[in-house]
Length: 382
Image 1 (cartoon, rainbow, N blue to C red):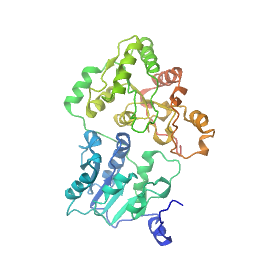
Image 2 (cartoon, rainbow, N blue to C red):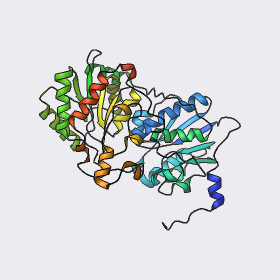
Image 3 (cartoon, helix red, strand yellow):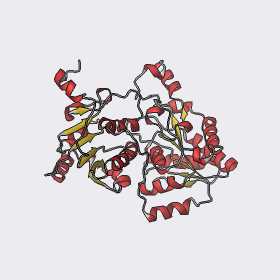
Image 4 (cartoon, rainbow, N blue to C red):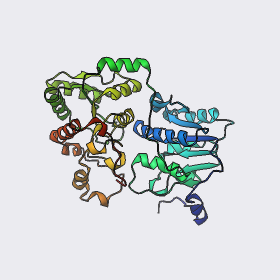
């Protein structure tokens, strides 16, 4: 036992009532998902589906500050920014901003305790949260209804489970993220219409020692092949961290071909505009991989430490290099189907299971495919 007193049978039956029905579409709906960039990109089709099904419903999205820089201006959505780093002061500010407001329902689409505590500022009679299997950090104490279990779901499909719980089964896989004219112009200057371009976003966040990054010299080999064998230009993107700057320097030094370095030099809107014009993105499990999906650009995702069927680029699963099963076997001595769906591999050298030839094969296969077939839905139940 974990020492936490669990609610009784009556509560369990109440929160697992399978369907939620409204006599009329809700007038005011609050979505609560603060982070991260990739997860918030998964949220956008959920918003578009709600807008299509309930056009008169007023949607408020409480979102993190960084994520709002990319998605805070979605049409038809009120985005309220919450500063995750502000602690109690941030929660007080959110409570003051929402004072006197009431929603028909709140969808608590994040299980982290920080998000749950902040969600207490939202006044709503219906507080819908995740099922027990996808919950942690006392998530169930902050909701009064739960969505149905959905084993082995992609993160985006998990978000759509909230809509299914409310009777909405048709999905609108549309993003339409606004991009300022100046960001579009800057992207066009770097990626003209006649310039096939490989974008490499080499690094993932290292906040949790997630070991998702591929060796810089292997990215350099991919860049060299793209320039010499495919006639592409190569562009590097990423944040301003010391590690990302180090990656940029190493890739440029080892590639032996011209590489455009934009690491640490773009806003999220500017990065999105670049991804819209790119031919293909190569990236580990990271925010830019999911931004590229939202931008309509195929992704060759590099996956060994996380499960691509859960967190992979949603419309580019066929282009993923998947060494996760081998990494799981090497670290845990078990097959993938014997571990938790979201289990991460923490072996520092796991990404080295991905070879340069693996990546070149996937890029080559993509380039040999008609562009209209570059983006496809993942297999049902994958």
